[in-house]
Image 1 (cartoon, rainbow, N blue to C red):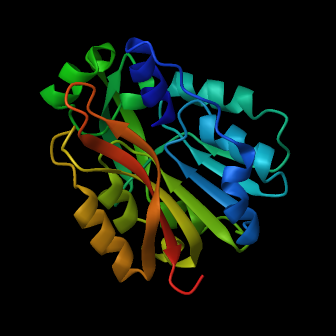
Image 2: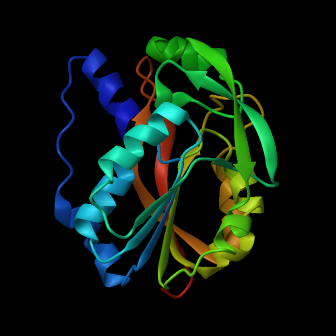
Length: 232
């Protein structure tokens, strides 16, 4: 979301400010040792996490070939990093991703006209075939160190990732999930559905971080929602 926010603000003549490093001190307090970066794009989140939590193992998932290459280059000096060239969903297989010219807006779901209208630089898309795996299936072959942070930024595909990763999410202490309040992709779920799914898994919604507003009327489109395991 940060990239879309910056691009949208730039179009309005507004410069996004640098995020203060101490904003994520709460992650240190949770003693996070493993980060699962679902929807890594070119490594924006992974790079930042590696800087503020250098002791962490970071596992990133990105299906787009060119973004994957940029991700691995960006993290080439991170000794505790591993990348997986796949999308995540509710079952293993292959799917068609609607690749946007603005890569962070690419999705396994079709972009709605509202998205293209509000952010015209995202409107040009084409279809690419990508492998899809479940989070639980990938993690079964890994030895994760507790405590786990999972970030999910998958452009409307959140419910499918959750359904394919229930066991793994059950091990997490904290989640950062991009959620929508207005539908920007066909068949996407909104905040209430994601909230209910995660509450069932024992998480509490504790607030939001970055927020994306409609550039026309100011209404809230998306935010990066923080969920903590109850009792943490």
